[in-house]
Structure formats: structure tokens, C-alpha cells
Image (cartoon, rainbow, N blue to C red; front, side, top):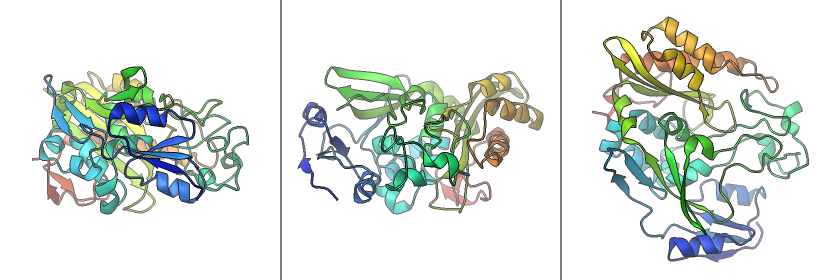
Length: 352
């Protein structure tokens, strides 16, 4: 590990000023950053510790019925908050499906959004990777790429984004609050992460020194609580990233889908909002034929980036299954294996 400076500012403005210096990186729980530093994937010259900044660790109900979640709220604390789990069950289920209990106890909301891809070539400093070292190429294109992107990829990068948490957040129109040197701004989470294009090293809209201070959910997102699920297929049942995942939320009245929200994970370098599928579902009956049409619409633009054509059909099936489970109703209990298609509904009494 290379030498680096360590600073612990007392205010958000001091943190932003410190992190605006070239080579700086924010440090919260460090569950991803420290691994990257140990492997030589990233080599910051300064760590700006934000763990003691005031006002970033609270969960606040907003006047419109929405929720404001501080960037330093721990994943486990958010998932197990009874009011949050009842109002936004798909997000709680996504959080509980990610990593291990020990990591969820440490990892933060802001850090979850900013975690880096788990592409093997990104982590192998001997491999060419435009994301890690711009202009060197992408060894994943001709390598082991069965788990790589099928939507939004480019010849420069075929990696995927690893976050479970971000997928239902995108589906429910979450907004990211960002503090920078010129003040505070807001960006929809759907627009926050960037597709690779010709510059895969630019992963988000954050400018140097900008800090995520909160994530906000609108009050209308809670209207989907009765019919919302997150479903995740992984290569092993626990402690694994998604091969493909889907967050589905429906508002059903008198046997008709009045409104639908759908997002996919594991298929692109950002959580993928499937708006075309949502349009297909609006006004449809909550039945298998409708869900299959929505799945086709969601993956209409998908293309293999290598030996991963199977992911397209897998994604269609996961979308159909997630919509079917959502239509059946949010269970009172979080499954013992959260988000697993193999889970029974016997689990923790959290949503009730």
C-alpha cells in the first residue's frame, strides 16, 4: 500500500475543501475502498475521513411522506428500521441480500452507491482496464466475461455495477443530495451513475471533492408498499453479487395495474430503469402474459458483450418472476434468504 495523508475534518465544508485536492478520496466504512487500496487498484494520496461529520447519520420523515436517509446511515440499520421496511420493503429486501451481516453492519448508504465494479480485470492490475487505467484497453472483451454487461456497454468497458441497494432506489425515483464547493445540488439516482461510453473511468456525475450527504425517497414511493419485491440470482445463495436482479413495484386497483416501477441490476454499469416495460404494464392486468410482454420490452435493447447471451434470457425470466411475486403481494416477513428465488416466505417479521 502506498503512503497517504489522513485528515478528519469537523464539518462538511471542510471535508469538501480537503477532498477537492487532487488524489483525495473519502473514507467512511472503507469496505470497498480499503480492498482497492490493498490491491493497488486505487492509490489515493489523501484519505478524508467523513465518519464523524455531523448530521449525516439520521433517517428523517419528510412533509410529503417521503424519507431522507443520511449518507452515513449503516445498511443494516436502515434495513432493520421497522418503519422503513414497512414503507419500502423492496429496498429493505435488497439491502439484506447484499454482502454479509458483518459488512452490512459497517457499510454506509453513500458508500453503497459509490462501490466499484467487481470485474476481475479491473481488480487485476496486470490486465488492461480502461476504467482503472484509461486508454489501456479492456481485456474483459476477449476474456472471461459471462457475468458482464448486456445493456449500455461499449467497446471501452463491459463491466457491471454491483449495488443491490441502488436497483430499487432507481425504480422508486430516489434523489441524491450532493455537497460541493459551490453549495448543494440534487441529482436523480437514475442519472447519477454514468454508462461507460469512451470514458469508463468517469463513473458518476460527482465532481472532484463533491460528497454525497443524503438519499431521498419521494412520498409517492410508499404507495407501492403492498406490491413490491426485489429478486436476485447469484452464483451462490449468499454473500454474492447479482448475476441478474430486478426490483418490481406495482400499484394495483380493481384488478388493474395503475402504475408500475421496474429496474434491473447486474446487466449494465448502472442500475437500469426499464421505463418501456413500465409503460407496457400501465393499464394491464397483473397476469403472466402482461409480465412476459414487460420483460421483452425491458430487454429489447440487450446485446451480449461476450459469452453472456444467457443473461438476456435470464433477465427476462427474473423480471417476469419479480413482477409475479410483486403482484401476489409483499409478504409480511422478509424471506429467510432475502431476494432469493429459492426462498420460502418463512423469515423475519419485518414488513408488518
